Amino acid sequence: MLRLYNTLTRREEPFEPQRDNTVRMYACGPTVYARAHIGNFRTFVCLDVLRRTMKYLCGHAVHEAVNYTDVDDKTIAGSQAAGLPLRDYTDKWIVAYREDSDTLGIETPEETPRATDEANLRAMSDMILALEKNGHTYRRDGSIYFKISTMPQYGKLAHLDVAGMKDGARVDVDEYTKDDPRDFVLWKATKPGEPTWDFGAGPGRPGWHIECSAMALRLLGEPPIDIHAGGIDLIFPHHENEIAQSEGATNHEFARFWVHVEHLFVENEKMSKSLGNVYTLAEIRERGHRPSALRYLLLSSHYRKQLNFTWTGMDQAEEAIRRMVDFLARLEDVPPSPEGFGAAGIGDGSHPHVAKSIATARAAFKDALEHDLNTAAALAAVFELVRDVNAAIDAKAISKAESQDVQKALEDFDRVLGVISLRRAEDAEPPVAVEEIEKLIEDRKAARHRRDFAAADRIRSELAERGILLEDNPGGTRWKKK
Ligand code: AMP
Ligand code: ZN
Image 1: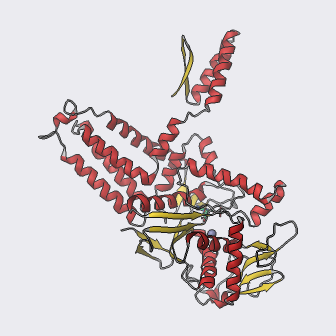
Image 2 (image 1 turned 180 degrees about the horizontal axis):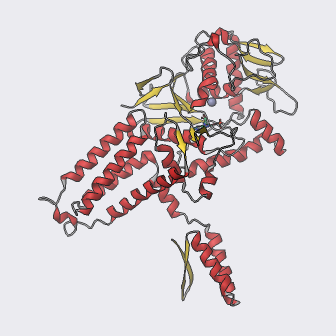
Image 3 (image 1 turned 30 degrees about the horizontal axis):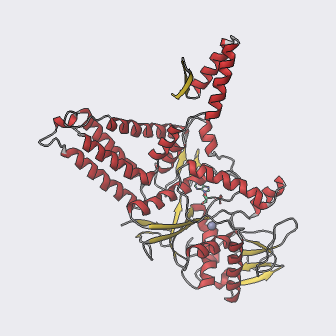
């Protein structure tokens, strides 16, 4: 059974969904005011592997919501600077996020709500009114605040000593006046030039924390939901405040398991937009690396350990995937039995060692992931199998049927890891757009026609550098990938 570390209890606990074998899971999604960076994607890729583990290894169904935070100080400031309505401005970043997320092989969650969808804004208002009814709020200058002194259990997730709590960098200390600096805003009074809605809580816009509480409960049903997840920086105050809001409004536990992914670092500093040390997926590709290698790198260490991003690490990830791909090609080349390697086997041409290696790898892979999603150990199990079976191929001690069993095992592993399938899709895509290749072939033809062979050669060699080879045949010029 899957064991997951639960931030709420600070322990690893056996995990199963509470109802209908369906995991109801919410992950805080991107704030859509810029392209997400690969630190953000560490969180999303690790949570994708959690989702896939539960689906493909544990046999659960998954109902997952990942939101777009499309209204907050940053999105509003960005839309004002761009001179665009908020929704149009954030549309662009949502498209960019989806593109990168697909390119990294992240499965699309069942629900991808936007905070400014009307149904969500209504759910936020309703939740605030329920909190008001339960005595957890106060109003000041048109804004509504959560009064944390009304929640004795406040601090249970972050394990805070609330009495001694100081205002941290991310505590919402803004120009709105509060009774107590620890209180946080639920609904912000309208300010000039800012978007504003009124669905019962008065004119204004939602605070960040209420968005997630309301969307999680609206989309995933009766509390408690099974898993709430995000990056580790969200434990406090965001997730603590989500608990206060959801539990204050419903009087039920909000989420059973809280899963937090450690940060991606660069040169031993957290990768974050405010530090300016971020890389986007596009920048990784510009340096000649494949998204599959980034996905691999992000999975190469346990999600609760810090991971330091380096270019050497990217090279090693490329190399690791190349080993897997080469290995798969070698399996393809195992000739059919009995003429092939199978003839060297015992009795019926079988090699018990191969079946044993497969069984060992399958068990080790499952164990690793079931043990709090240990992707590093799962990858080690895959490479153990690669090593064993490479030796069997060298010794011609494997039959075609056995090689197919190995392929099947690797396919099953990859349903969870999602690396090889991604690499295959990348290989199927030419590194230069087909239209561009075709246009360059035409340009080259024209250059040759006017006897400008230097220009024609330049086109050929530039394309070769970008991974496309041209072949001249009597019928015309054809291209292929290097
Ligand atoms: P944001 O777009 O800032 O709301 O962040 C989206 C997600 O990325 C949140 O779950 C963050 O906790 C997570 N995140 C931000 N920076 C990093 C990082 N350097 N490493 C891993 N996750 C991060
Ligand atoms: Zn959230």
